[in-house]
Length: 226
Image (cartoon, rainbow, N blue to C red):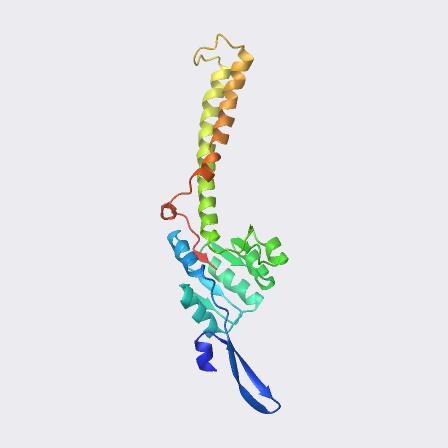
């Protein structure tokens, strides 16, 4: 039994009456994309990856080692997962990824809860801050990169629009001449100035989907990913 557990198996003992017939070891194999997803998350700057599992510690350690996760915590009940999340949050922001009912309390306790959509339970999907519509692990690095790119462009658009407002509104109020406006009524000219700021904010939105940056260029990352 110890050998099977060391190999990452969950062991069941088969008995008929008072006679023990043997032991059966079962194992959930990691998804094919799990190891690649972990590698991509490290490229995004994830400092620590921890697996929280309800399986025994030996099984959790074997799975974590197979996919390249830093450490594993096994034999956890839902309240134990919440406690682990709170301990990790004491040192930095934490993202929790889960799909089951047992993961819902931990998803709520994390800085950001991410639920795997297709395979996720209703409770997990409602509790999480982010819900992936599919259950493909390779989409997780893409989502993180897309969110960072979106935040960067939002900040750029905000500063650009504030700069235009700071320049154009006083120019309109004090009647400053900016180009040839003789052909346009004053009200259209003032309106055009105000529309420039709105246009600058909207024009950057297309950049979000046009280019996803190199993950290694992102300085901000979660301190722990569960």
